[in-house]
Length: 335
Image (cartoon, rainbow, N blue to C red; front, side, top):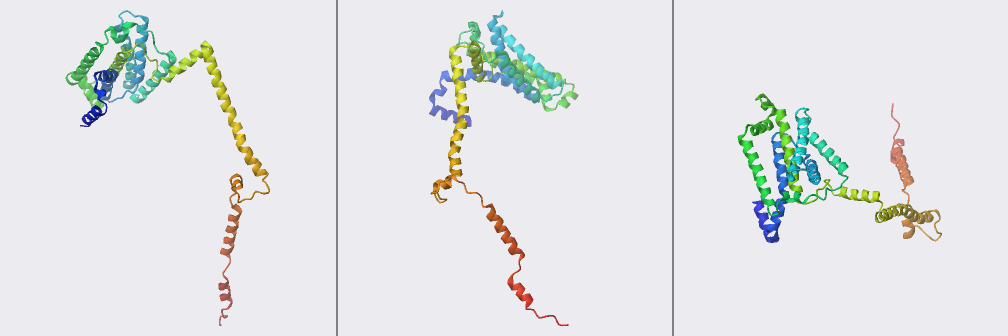
């Protein structure tokens, strides 16, 4: 119901949202995420979690671009196989650590995510894989055929996984392991091997999604963050020593030096009037003037408070006069 209301609002506010071009772009941009979600669903059904899919996605995309750029025989299909092999290897490492060494999956996949991200940044230095062969884009097919190929691939994957989870023994084993691993082990299921293979399948599907996303353009991003590219460009300009880069760096260093040098001067300028006004006040200035009150701060009345405390202490120890007179006016006791 909420989706229907949102669709009606979008159709009224932005009619171009439901245009054929926009819907095609949304489909092409989100279908790789759908493929990654298929593998993540298997991992979750097995009772584990995998948060390294982003780094595996980036590494597989770079591997696909490098293999395509090297001109490996077989074209884009060899590129796809190489990327899927890398994803399967990463999934096997995750699955072995989780299944056989009993390390929590969130710890293993978090460490793998950081290791792959930093390793990829170190290997590529933030550079993108460019100058890819023309047959890499759209799998060498016309652009109008690529959405049809992508839709057919997604339909086959979705149907195969859904049918296998319901009718194949391995699929039912995944459900049993995720529900109760101890009961599944007592029923004769090799829980460790099953979890390891689930991670392998998830890594392979993530790599396939990376290839499906990479063939849309002729450039493959080397890192997950865009600022690494800026760092790479700055490093290249510094190494090449071009005049424009050197002048820009020199101006930047000069600006930093000026910014660091003006701070003490400003502080000195702000403290000079206060010091002169506090050490040598004019004879005509009084405490009631606004200038003197704003420049000369009034100290806290610590002594007055102490005196008040002393006075209160004295008054608390003394006896009232009426009590002394009453005590002296009493008659002596009779014997």
